[in-house]
Every structure is written in structure tokens, then in C-alpha cells.
Length: 323
Image (cartoon, rainbow, N blue to C red; front, side):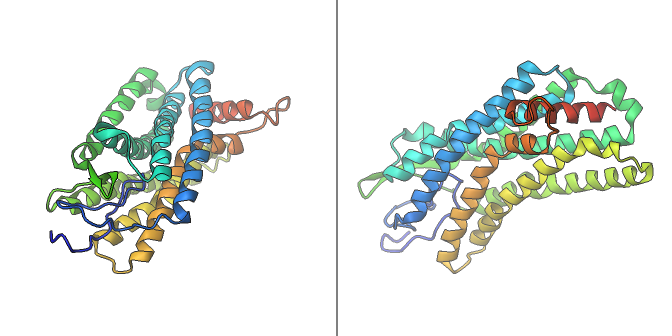
């Protein structure tokens, strides 16, 4: 690369580092530390607080308060994924405020890995839940006899292993360089690899899972329509809300990634899109506990208790699926 050539903006991980694949770093693509970075830092702090507290509460309820079941295994794993991601948000906050990566190479790689681990594990778990519900609806007797916590735990472990493998490119492409008196954690894509990695993340971490989820939903809807049972629809409302929320939060991120991959010319739109995509993707990790609280049935004696609402939501899903 010519040392005088201005670098093109890079599709970032959603830790907001927008430095490109550079062999000779000269000029960062986005040098202005405008108010959007302050907003990002504030949003990160809010998501961190809500995400750690909310998902921690779900982990406590699903892991220790409720009886072990297949459904609580799914929701416990979702909460662990979001809790893990939220726990690493302070690194991004410090980086945004200081405009300097002070945590070293290994943490540069690991924070990015954890972020994509959250993305892949969340969508894979939603696929697992959808397939599980589809099987329950289509083959209720078989599901009653074959579904077990042990099998569910094995499936969750496999999902996490596959998610870790899918997230591994971050370990190889993330680098730290010293530029204009500051340390920069950036994506150093080997030649020709950016399109492969971005496309893989979109196809495997978004498109294919949602095609599977939609297929499961069509089967479930047709079956329920035949049964004409209102009660049989109850165990799917939390799952539906989780899937819709994930879709809304992650769609902007992938759209911007694909726009940049196709050399979209308007850099200001890309920068704004990166900020919005980062906000939505980050916010998704703290929303699930509120979905449980808002959708779960109220307890007559504890109608305002968040604990009770989350517990009722998970229990209702579990009891409805069993029925």
C-alpha cells in the first residue's frame, strides 16, 4: 500500500474499531472523535449494567431456582452467552473514551472472539429452540419420551463448540499497531480473506439460521391451525419475541457489513451505519430478560416483581411445551 494513500474504512467488529487491513498504517479511515463515540460509550455502560444484572438474574433463576428441564437449559445457555458478552463491554468503553487500546494483543483478539461467540451461540440456540418446538408439535409422543436434560446439555455444548470455531477468525485477523501515538486494535485481513469472513458470518450466523427458523415456524403454524388449539400457542410467545428481537438487532449490522464489502461509496453513510449497527447489536445482549419480564404472566401476589415475572415466563414456556 502506498504510504500516502488514504485507507478505506473497514467493516468493524461491533467493538467500534474501524481500522482497515493495513500493512503500512498511515491514516485511520475515521479520525474524527465526534459525539457518536460518546453516545456509544454511554450506551455500552447502560447495556453493561442492564445486561450483567438482567442476565445474571436469569442465570440464577434458570440455573438454581427452577427445576432442571430442556427449556430451562436453552434459556440458561442464552443468558450465559449474553452475560459473557456484557462482561467484556467495559474494554470497549475504555477504548472509546481514551481512543487508545491499552489492553494488549491477546485481549484485542479475545474481546473480538467473545463478541462473535455471542452472535453465533445466540442464533444457534434460537435455531435449536425452534427445531425443538417444531419436533414437540409434530411428534408430541416421541418428544415426550426422548427429550431429556442430558441430551439438551449435550446439544448446547456442541452448539458452543461450533460457535467457538465460527468465531475463531477473530483470533487470527485482530492485531494491535502503534499509530500516531496511540495503540490501535484493528482487523488485519490477509489478502482475499475479508469477503470470505464477512460472507461466512452473514450466511452461517444470520441467513441460514433464519431460513431454518422460518421453516420451523411454518410447520408449527400449519400444525396449530389444524389443531385449532389456542392453548397450544402459548409456549411459543417468548421464543417468537426472542427471534424477532435478534433479527431486528442484527440485520443493520450485516447490511452495513455487506455494503462495505461491495465498496459502497458514501463513507458518511457507512460510518453512521456502523454506529447504528453497533448500537443495535450491542443492545440485543441485554433485552432477553426484559422480554421474559414483559411477556411472562404476572403473579397475583407479586405483579410488580421482576424476579417473579422472569420465573413465570420461563416456567410458562416449560409447562406449555410439556403440555
